[in-house]
Length: 286
Ligand SMILES: NC(=O)c1ccc[n+]([C@@H]2O[C@H](COP(=O)([O-])OP(=O)(O)OC[C@H]3O[C@@H](n4cnc5c(N)ncnc54)[C@H](OP(=O)(O)O)[C@@H]3O)[C@@H](O)[C@H]2O)c1
Image (cartoon, rainbow, N blue to C red):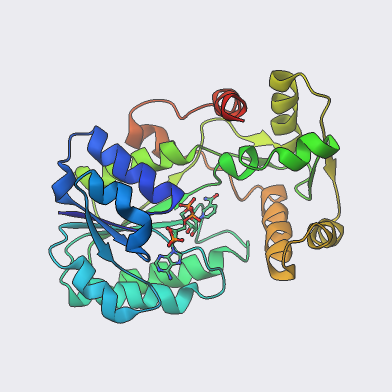
């Protein structure tokens, strides 16, 4: 049995899809989700749906019972994840899970990005649990940008605070394929894969790609981090989220979202989806 947490999220759904595409019978997959009501389509496809809320420990161990391979997808509530993730790890131990893969952040043990702190604590919890593990240290999703092009087209500008820094973004689908490969493979445990796209790009290069493919006049405007955060708050984001995004851009400026590991390509057995292809796909669905 392969159990996937947060399977109603964007990444979780793609992992389930990738497992099905690789021939795993639907009945051998457990979608362990916070809200089973959101997983009706997965249940209709024959996937087992179980409640697994990181805030409700009593739901977790029962959801993990019988799992041979558990994909633990990090939660989305930044600032609350240490307690939530501790619940998940404790439940995996209680359920006797023999293998766990965790979606962490690229360069988790060296980056100074604030967002990495919860991932570092979670990795330690997993190491200390004794469960054989793999860390899937995912870099940025290209969709972080391509899913949010509305304001860029509206104002003709992508704002950021990353300077000339490059990030090796990859598509969620590629990270999902890498997770599926690890879940179905018999590779080593106790390892961390540094997962990222093959060709790093700056935010100016990203916006130039969108401009070229859309025929629009668009530019990247770099701001000091505090001014960028202030602009995001004025646009309606909570202050903490704005501050985190600005801090992430400083991490990109320092070069902390690139790697030359080649791990993503090696796991998926093909080149990562290019920025050009990802932008093209996003513009087609706009
Ligand atoms: N690498 C990147 O660029 C990047 C960007 C954003 C996020 N992330 C991280 O990667 C994870 C997966 O990305 P994604 O695109 O799939 O994010 P997403 O679409 O926002 O999905 C987040 C998932 O986490 C689930 N979740 C949140 N709190 C939970 C809880 N208390 N108990 C159980 N499940 C909970 C959500 O459940 P519901 O479906 O019920 O809402 C959802 O399924 C995120 O959660 C975040 O940790 C990475």
